[in-house]
Length: 290
Image 1 (spheres, rainbow, N blue to C red):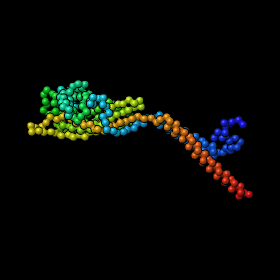
Image 2: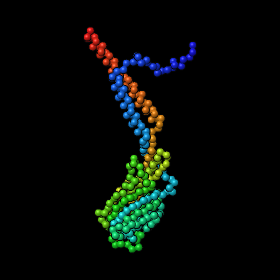
Image 3: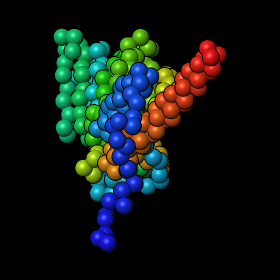
Image 4: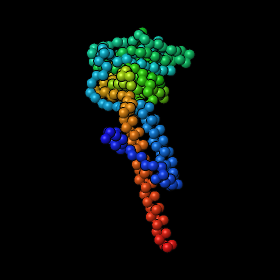
């Protein structure tokens, strides 16, 4: 007797003349196909889109930076002449730089009465401060007006990712034009290292920060101290990491198979129950008539 491989067929076919189409079955089949199409498109959209996963850990993510952090500062002082405006940098490693001028630019405002300072510089990864003041001026003014507007203060690389809402420029737009002209301003910054890794594995290093501020007029035994705009910073040991991820293809296929198989199975059960109940009802009606 020849071997017949068809005996392994678990999907046995029923002849068409033994099947019975119904309006209920057709309606359920149409709804089933629409439902499957909807779920398929939803899963396809989720598969194509990228997901941003964040995590926290304790480490220095950018060890190749040489212990430096890039800083970008853009600030306007509408009532202080550009000849008087300067940037000073200090930290706990002994750095003390007065009148930093590298990669900086001063733009006159209000017909020369004010100044817009734009600068890019680096600071060490240790607690310290940088401040805008008149300390580097040749002649100190009697009453320097430190009212100001901060357009930008950012650390590290610029991240432009729509799904990442972070405090990368927390002081952007800060307006102190109505404050006391003779007051000093202290901005206390807590800098949080941030890493963004895209699908290709490329990493970008930036920094978010939280800020608290106070305004005061300082005095010493010799009189009033010349005001300044202080940015005192410290680094958090916690690093925030954002990672782009996409659903694996095998998981997408598994989900689609589950959707199709599950929907057809449930629809078949519903159709079978309705058909059985309908046939039983017909038999009851026929019994009453006889």
